[in-house]
Length: 315
Image 1 (tube, helix red, strand yellow):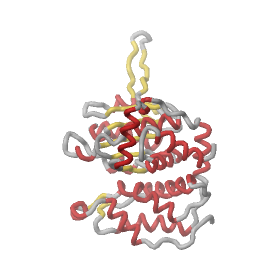
Image 2 (tube, helix red, strand yellow):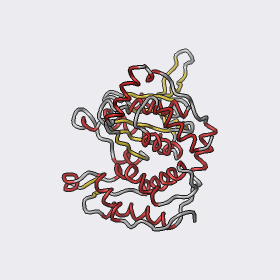
Image 3 (cartoon, one colour):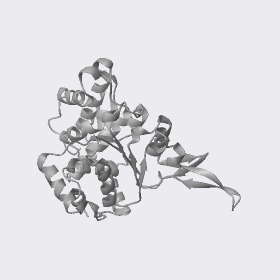
Image 4 (tube, helix red, strand yellow):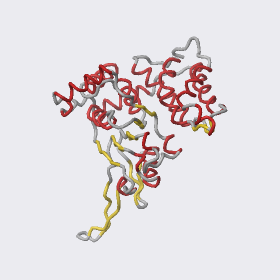
């Protein structure tokens, strides 16, 4: 199955259950191709958890869900070493992090100590339990959700290091009128309870992932990416700009966008299409900036200020 067919079928299959999520599905698929992680942020009831579950069903592999609360401990996520009285020896008990797709539901409800237990897994695809380092199986993807309106009610903002490890951040908006009307029909006829057909196996996914990483980027587009990133480090309202990890993420996301469009080279429009989702959560505004503008608005201004290469194609 070609990547265009996979992309279209993903949107169609998940679209039967969730209306108006085509862009989110595409960006989540790009993240999966590049071993990236996704942060879904929206008010309650907009389908964040359902989107993660249906996406995992469509791409196959094992799935686990962790409900984050203040009393969840790091060992509840990674696993523990316990003494087995029958065998008179210690054994490792794997936690829910040992899955291909891990849904970290309401991640900002957990304490910073518990949140940090995900850092090693997200960056290095491994987990250390009482001195034992265990690899995680490929593919591995964390889909985290958080509710922005409860930022002052028993929640813990994600630290800078963890935000930077999310490949993209998606803000799920309220549905349009006709979309919400369709949602009523879906729930009325019980479609939401049915399971989605698995579209890929691991071998097919790996082939697509390898092909996406071979998409070409010429010097003009590379320069364009670097200029966008460097503007975030020089902006007067930004206290902390995009890291080199963010630069790499923007390059990979643009490759993924081109790949899903059926091209083997990146054009500036690919970069522009993904930049807000890759860069917005990686900048930290100064006090003045946070009082006057949103990160998304500043990223938009930066994109407008950087000249776009006129001609860019395969090198």
